Amino acid sequence: MIARIAPSETERAAGVLEGEKIAYASQCFRRDGALIVEDIVEPAVIVRARQEFRAKYSEFCSERKDVASVGGQRFMVTVKLEPPFDDPSLFANPYILPILGAALDEGFVIGAFGVVCSSPSAPEQHIHHDGGDLFQRPDIDRLLPTVAITVGIPLLEMNTVNGTTALWLGSHRDRGRSLKETGIEPEIREGSYVLWDFRLKHGGTANRGTSPRPLLYLTYCRPWFLDHINFNKTNPNERQEPLLANKRFLSKLSEQHQRLLARALWH
Image 1 (tube, rainbow, N blue to C red):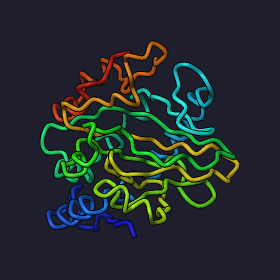
Image 2 (cartoon, one colour):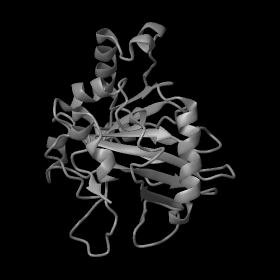
Image 3 (cartoon, rainbow, N blue to C red):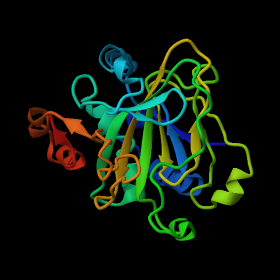
Image 4 (tube, rainbow, N blue to C red):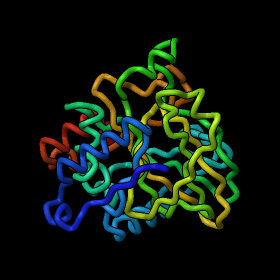
């Protein structure tokens, strides 16, 4: 069973999680490699983001050179950090930043920002982990602290009809043993976040609904880490950039948010 946490009324009033809850969330994340943080984005923000994605990016959900296919009828699209995706509650949510900091230490940055969209009738995705191995001996990677974390924000509820992301808890530490078990398929409400270690085995489940299921994703990572698997600059056919933002938008951000988005390319 995946751990779920949610801010208390006191924490919502303060806008941050208390230390004990951060410690509990961090412990669960280290153990399982995944965590759900519930109801931390206003539903209206999610609705606007879903509508904007459908209006501006639905044409990208097809086979083309500037879009990565990540499984049958699944496409990974870089989304520009402009309204409504530039809302800080999406890229710098105060309820998850301390959890990310506990796992990645100080100085972590956002390495990628986009949407993975599964089309209606999309089959189950292949089981995978996100960023490849740091070393040629994967057993070494399993002993190290995490270097990157995927944060998924469903723009449409993740459930048995729309599909969700199956997670093999513990596979970030013991890939072989964990895969002998059945992955969990959590339901995740709109306004909630799911976090998983880059090493965790996972895969999208089938979309049995009639609408595309967009999952907004962010990669948070240590400042020296580069995702050489999903964004391979040595491949001349790879035209997708991981993180795009407007220069004027970046210049108006706080110092903390500018640091988070230090890798953003201007457009």
